[in-house]
Image (tube, rainbow, N blue to C red; front, side, top):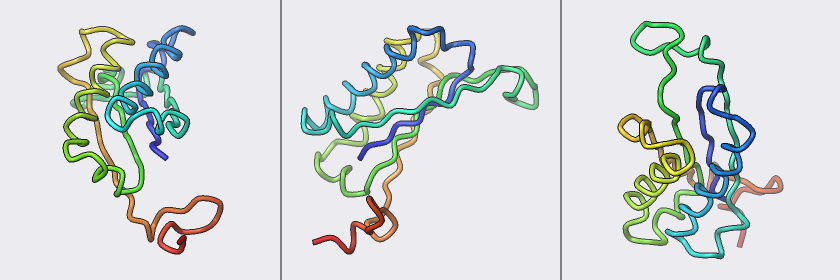
Length: 129
């Protein structure tokens, strides 16, 4: 399952931004993998008060949102150009939901977890047949 964790300043979540982010981030993953992936996309928000961010040694300077997509490593191999398409698509999704001003600094991290370190229902993927 692709799990997107979005870390952003709490002040950016206004009760409508959450659904916009869910829609655009889910669509970004589906645009790479197809509709089969839609019901598997999980999105969580880590909203941090600006006073609890620090950038360059300055407390209270909130960075642009960051998106971390974690999944089994094999998902990145399903589509030859998945990584660059996901990086661009997830960035575009955040911009569509929150505004163009964030684009230059949006961080996207793509994490692939090996089958012997990923499990669902208590069973490692490496042990599933």
